Amino acid sequence: MRRILSALLFFVSLTSARADVLVPELMASRLQAGETSQLEADLAARLAASPNDDQVRFALGATQFIRTVQSMSQDMYRYGLQVPREMDMMLPFFRFPLPQNPNPQRLDYERMRAVFQGALDGFARTDATLAGLGTSEIKLPLALGLVRLDLNGDGTASQEESLFALFNASLGRNRIPAEAGARFIITFDRGDAAWLRGYANLLSALIDFVLAHDGKASFDISAQVLFPNAGLPNEILNRQGRPVDPAFDEATVADIVAAIHMMHWPVTEPKHMASALGHLEQMVGLSRESWRYILAETDDEAEWIPSPRQKNGVLPGMGVTQQRVDGWLLFLGEFDAILKGQKLVPHWRLAKGINIRRVFLEPQAFDPVLWAQGSAALPYVEEGPMTGSQTWRQITGMFQGNFLGFAVWFN
Image 1 (cartoon, rainbow, N blue to C red):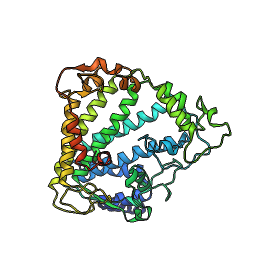
Image 2 (image 1 turned 135 degrees about the vertical axis):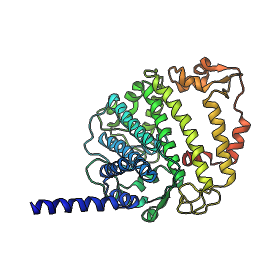
Image 3 (image 1 turned 60 degrees about the horizontal axis):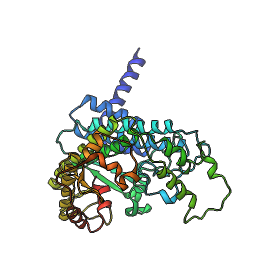
Image 4 (image 1 turned 180 degrees about the vertical axis):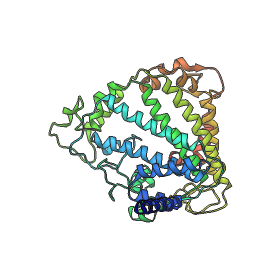
């Protein structure tokens, strides 16, 4: 009996010590070991015990976001994703730094939709967790270069599978040198918590748009360019023994053209379009909230998004000036007015404007060619004030020609 009691006391001492570990230390140890599921369980238990602890809540939401991205990466590896150079910057959900899978599983359109639905559910969990945040200050330093993920789902998180590599792949021309990865540390704060929630809503809006439509025709005709060995209908087009120019692959371009040619997607689940609109409206509000916190900060500590007063930002060559902040807030106001239907969007061959809100709430088949030609826009044409080219020239001018780069960052 004494031995049993001693063992119980020893177990209690271990669990108590574990509970005393600070959140940054817990995240560092778990993430550097690639133990994302264990980390989520640890943080969920802490939040259940202290539901008003904003640091724990943010850490849990961030972990849920990371696990959602990791799960999607594992799905992409499972089906043998290989992104051609010609498409590297075109596809936001297919830019994972993955090795080649020698034995991919069979993929079809319904399985691909299931991948997106799983990601949508994961981002919804992230949003629900972060929605409970209060106004407390948060300080959560994270050595991004040391965090490992199990990107290919083999049960281990290797040095090659780092969150830094995944993060860097999303930066485009602003990528950080690999040798800086090990010392790449970000101190996340309350403004970043609102930013992360906003990004979860942005990604959810994109997924909702995809799930609202039936894109099977485009998928079946051209998905073999991304998943060359997953048993897709046109996979034989990859196996003709033709020479491939590493600088330019005509077959990839042909598959892209074919996908666009088949892009007349009927609306099969209109609820997803309404949901996408809600996510975009949430994103606008959260971006404004993020900047309220950022502009009120008085420290300057490894900032993910610095204010104009802060000089210790972590992204090289991406200085935040007051002009750029003003430009972003101007953009948010204009975008919000468009989403609300208060301002209409012009079309090059129409005198009246397009009510974008009705595009989401009264959705019809999506066809980019017919949108460019004008036929698809006609059901949404109205009289009313329009967003103007002068406003957009002013916004882009405030970013010195790099509005898109800052938009991807600022969210």
